[in-house]
Image: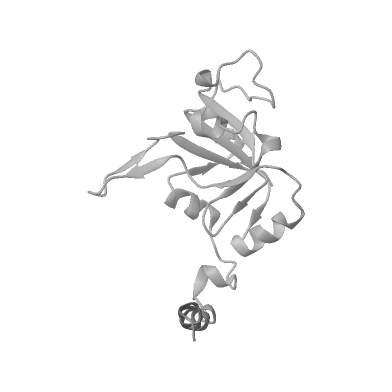
Length: 165
């Protein structure tokens, strides 16, 4: 038996192990709001959004005449949210520029659909025709070896999600 076969022989039985909870897709009891809070984001109503960012400007597909450095609040639409982990699927159709969600100070994403877990999320993606997409979960964050968490270190300082029924 080759070394490769020995290694794969040890791995294959692991694939049959049933992981409890989120990874099996058996539970649909995930709380999107709680998942957002866990990753440092918040969920608000449209009325609360108006109070938090009263003078925001919604950027359309083009940033003509506007420097990306000037984007304080970026307001975009997400394709759907994932209750399991608070991630939101974004496509290039919703972005004025691919880098925009990462350089704005505050990111606001409007979501109309929530799927329970990543299994359902990947089912949603089977018919996607976009050339670029990503799952975004929470604002930018980093931590050092002493476990000091810093929000907004490399990108948006806040993520606010607005749910529309």
